[in-house]
Image 1 (cartoon, one colour):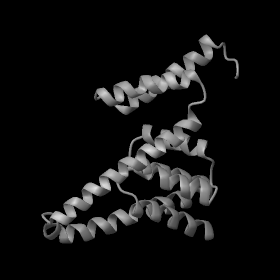
Image 2 (cartoon, helix red, strand yellow; image 1 turned 180 degrees about the horizontal axis):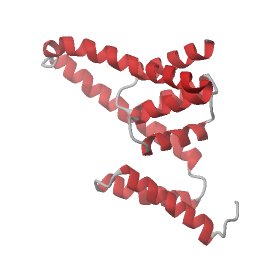
Image 3 (cartoon, helix red, strand yellow; image 1 turned 90 degrees about the vertical axis):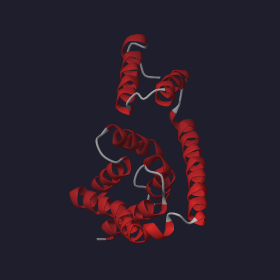
Length: 182
């Protein structure tokens, strides 16, 4: 039962204390999953996050479900998912009840603006930190730059960019490097 409680609490904190979606949740995912509970290492978290981004659904929910499943099977996946979703359900229910009263308040509008700025800073920090650990050679930097261009400057679907990068990586490994390891 302890692992279920830990899964629920960890993902409840992540779901309740982060704003801005999957990328904004990466710092807390890293803290809870990698640093605090040691359920996986940073590289595995990146892999899980990348798969969660490619599969249908919300990235954070996909990640919570996978981590929960990995630690405690199907019940763990369910508990972690409920933990991730529960804060949003509570917050949305409360916010909907008082939305009309707060939406026009200038203080609330400024607070939201400040939160958005912090979320951007947290996302940038996470991208730079994880990039240092993920981009291990010049070829990885080239793939990263080539993926950034359509992601930033066009409306190319994320799935197309990820699949293209995966294919480029496979082609590089098999054709150009001849399947050799490092």
